[in-house]
Length: 203
Image (cartoon, rainbow, N blue to C red):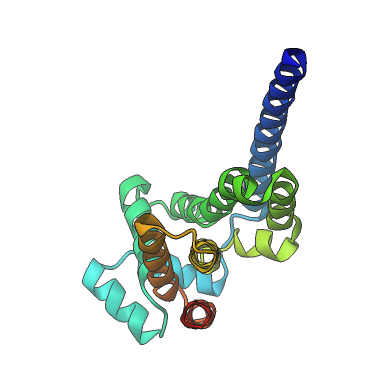
């Protein structure tokens, strides 16, 4: 019996190491694919880069005039101001890394929260879908707000599920409120998803 328990713990430990290696590999692959896709910038990406060169007040005003919520531009501006040097090539690289960051965070969520809640197989499938859809890789390589919107909506959705399953806590509600507000201030299409999450909670 003790031998079986010991063996079971060893198997669990092996599973954890296997999952950790798998998710590191997937995250690295996602980063390489996104960074190698191109270092050029499309018109919308140029708009993002030019916008963050303005002062904070002007940037938020110009973003609102362009009917885009300002949160993504605020995130990019923080990193460009901290790590950029006025070199356009370097600013493009920094901004693209910022766009791929939500993809890495989603992979971390799949390896931790999703795996603990729904099991190893679901965690692997979640990670596989994140990295497996070419459209997600594409939007994560653009200097735009789409990957951040995906991250915030996913977190809000997971917190809403916990609340609906009566597994909520003060921490769950705080994360849900912050992520849902952040999603709405990232892209107006995120408002649609957040609206339905609130509707489900009301029901």
